[in-house]
Image 1 (cartoon, rainbow, N blue to C red):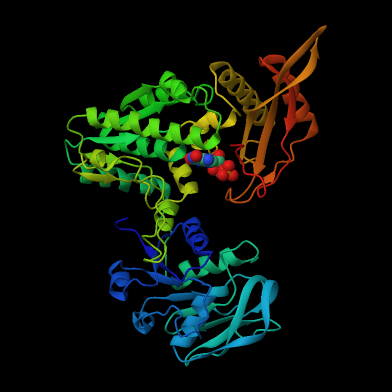
Image 2: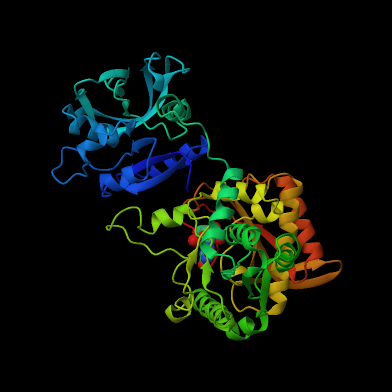
Length: 517
Ligand code: XMP
């Protein structure tokens, strides 16, 4: 990002580092996360207006603990240390860090010195979230304590002349009652930020950056899945270069009702691109004939998908750039930020075989590479994309195929697709579509006896799955009101063929997963 004020967050391996970054962005300030292994000259080369040192699991007293170049405190750039970042600041600058008699964990009442610019406008006493075993017992020269709790004399310290600050608590978590204000104060009162990070400014800059990268006649290809990230990337690139963008959308036949039509509509009329829809439903069904093992289904779908996509990529002539909807969490988690220790390849890279990727001599176009998911959604809204596309719930690559237990047939696909559409419609009508993070129907492979009119039936059991979660690593089942469940169940058995019984999945993750296969 050019010409935008920037905060650098130095990551010491804390579970909350991404959260710090999101909070800074929420305050309309751009930030980047870098590994603690990044040389100081590289950090300063980014011209930061402030630096945040994150928390981390180590103890500064360990011989092999992560360290920082002491010169970072002498750059005339404000620094805020958080938790481990505070202890590291104290240790590096000549203060004392010791193991506390008692570990401080959870919500702790803290008294704040409101004369410090870091705590301006706060209540003198509020709850802060603590999680530490070590603490600062003597501040380095020039520092004074600006917050304390019953067990901790240095909940925060400052050398305001040098604009160096540190907090023992975690301002980034919502359990810290005034945490966001502490971060805002650091950004606006200490670093002098002006709040120049807005999504409309991002769109203008990015459209220009894409034009600069691709040049006046360059052509780009993008794999469009219909998901939020690839759709917003396509819309941005379309705005920059119009139909010099070719989007390849592989319809494997396992999409939800009207999904393919909506993609076609948006990228034909609203954001005109050169859209190739590969209608591969029959191929995929043939590949999956007789297959009921979940892993085998996934493997075959994944393989066929890459095959269809690569086939189109090979066919395209004169397209030098490959675009991807990579977003910032993918970048952070792929190891390019965390240093050499953590290497985890993310799903956007590596999908295409090396020989196909090598055809794109111009390189990658990744316009969302620096954005978090909520920012991607804001960009989509700002661009005027349809609400359903921007707020689309997560949908697995293999689609409805892993929501049909046992062998997949066109009839079963129709059953799960129609029931899913009813569920979605009713959840939206009830105004619960933002509260429930993911919801869908699953066609079990079990048939039960029922009675419809005077007829005995022997039809399938259909399950409803609906979950609430922050991260999809752990989920709770959504407490959908009984009356709404009753309405959904009645509609499904009345309107959807081959179903005579509806059940509700009331299992958390763990031990269950979100998807059934
Ligand atoms: P599980 O079932 O593992 O799902 O609890 C967690 C989240 O991941 C989604 N999911 C997938 N997404 N490809 C994807 O892109 C997949 O193969 C896949 N499997 C599960 C799932 O829908 C949920 O949001």
